[in-house]
Amino acid sequence: MATLAGFFGLLAVILAMVGLYGVLSYTVAQRRNEIGIRLALGAGRSRIFKLIMGEAGVLLLIGLGIGGVLAVLAARSAGSMLYGLEPGDPLTIGLAIVLLGAVGLLAGYLPARRAAGQDPMSALREE
Image (tube, rainbow, N blue to C red; front, side, top):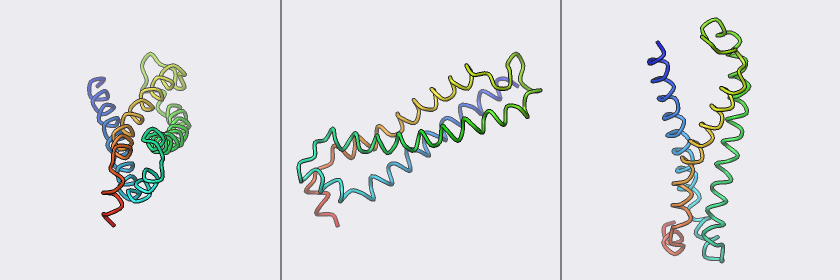
């Protein structure tokens, strides 16, 4: 049972990473012209990287906040199935939040790096 739960937990982490990556990639693709204009007007590549990672951070904080509250509420109802853990164990919830935060930042890294590395002239010619 623990192996099955671990597998589904890993699957959930992978789905969260792919979902956040997809949303950020779509956002970067939609804003390609804007990013090209920012780069053409002198914005540094690190500034563009920070812009995209900042947006990823906001999405991540909102998701982790809502998910953390829901996890505490759901743990109370699933308390009888938890062996050796308290329903609102702060260490477990904290580790889950840190793990999902790291996964979310990793998912945002690739679209941010791609946005910062694009050529401004090709982005402006495209539209």
